[in-house]
Length: 292
Image 1 (spheres, rainbow, N blue to C red):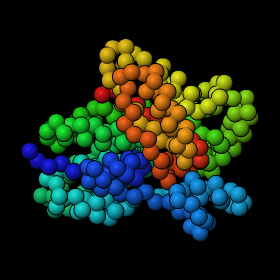
Image 2: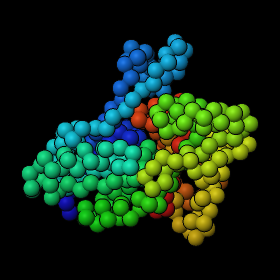
Image 3: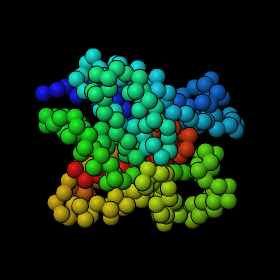
């Protein structure tokens, strides 16, 4: 049985313990925010909060990993595994997938045959879902080509939803107009929150949640309604949760799911990556789900 290794980019938000357990190579995402470099904080969200206290008005910019970054990851894994499966953030929002493809082209013909690249058409914990599927199939002894086929088949069915506290991050990133951001601020005061999601690889508005008293409750009801049919048919569902440096929100959502949705596996809870951090801001909550 060939040994199959994995490569992901940092947007997948896999927890460190999972990365270490399965020896997954992570290609880091890049953020350019000079004003944040000297501000204390163990993660980007804590730095953002401190920057706001200090009156910093700038916003961060992000860039995709280079082909060399992926090439380094491939060369790290090739001596350890017979074949490598690499999963990337959606190609509709980033050139990361293209960087991975370019890196593969830099390898020898023999090495190229050992590398497989999957476009998740998702981000954050949604990107992680195909990788978790790969781990399941590797454990079952499946071949790399068969695993990649099943990963690609599951991609359209991976759903991701998120709620954010302040539209200024989306506005600064260019993903929300000033007029729309002002409207969002007004309706949020009435307990109405836009629900973000990824559809066909693009970040978009999925709808609105009214009477929102807490993000965990709002996302739980969304998950409950969307998974009802699958669970009613006896299918198993896997979810993952990411947060903007507010683990209490993530734990509350996890507890609601485990208490009320038997048959749903909570794969992990993790911190939102730097790429989405500068888009959704602190205290955001994101959940993804897919049928198993």
